[in-house]
Image 1 (cartoon, helix red, strand yellow):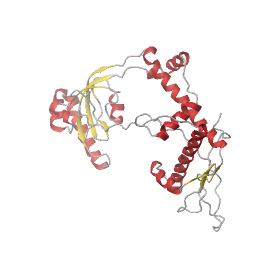
Image 2: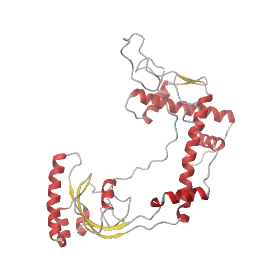
Image 3: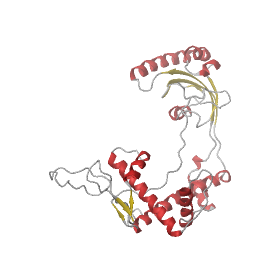
Image 4: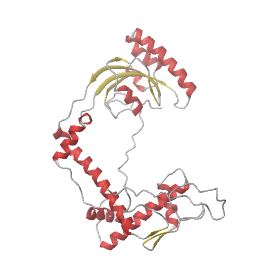
Amino acid sequence: MGCGCGGNGNGGGCGGHDPATDGGVSAPVVREVVPEPQPAVDAPQDEEDEAGPELIASSEQEWPRIKVNGVAIAPEAIARELQYHPADTRREAVFLASQALVLRELLQQRIAELGLAVRAQPGESEEEAATRALIEHEVPMPSADESVCRQYFENNRERFASAPLLAARHILLACPADDAEARSRTREQAEALLAQLAADGSRFAELARAHSACPSKEQGGALGQISKGQTVPEFERQLFRLQPGLALQPLESRYGFHLVWVDQRIEGRPLPFEAVQGTIRAELDQRVWQVAVRQYLQGLVGEADIQGITLEGTDSPLIQ
């Protein structure tokens, strides 16, 4: 089991943290309109369906019958799309899958209308290439000027600093995250060891070799230099609040309890505007682009003849 302590990648720490899951920016979608629930034809009038996204289907087993400008969305396509839209209920998942297919069909129809033909880039399908070309053609690409970027920088200076560095040692007392009884026993053990360390800090390496579940115990618990992003989040939040010396309380993580001694703390330094201007511009441009794409999709919805599902178009209050 990993310990989540991180380390500097040059022999420090155990490197046992969970791998980060990178997630790209998801494509903007059009939100659903939730209609007033209507009672079933042969159901008692006091029993109403739960409110939810509007789909034309008379039972949970039946797929909605959807047409986009006269083009039908096949039930088989909805069934295949379901896997990409996990939801709390089948009805919601079917709606999200159907919505995605409607937007896809609208984009493909617009591509055909404009006669766009592009060459796919490596790793890109022809459909993805055509969709990219359509968005580039019809959605203006914004660019924040220097004054806007500088104003954002001045209003968010705390975000633009180099990360602090810590040189630290730890003793990991491991226990399962979902075993409350074991957690309680392990916390008591951690507090007992902490009392020994408070009385005699020179015993840290000895106690690490005897009790730690982290491979760093072979180096007396030394983790090397640690910067942000190298440990699991719950451990990092506590670790970077510490000042040099022995932490007065055990630090709890999904792996157990950590006794930590910070040997050195090097504070981060503020970064100049010139060093982060490009990052700020890219972030602001991306935000505006996402809004523009969402509005573009809503415009396509508003102009289309869509049957079997209700989506928000340009008449929606979302369009400002």
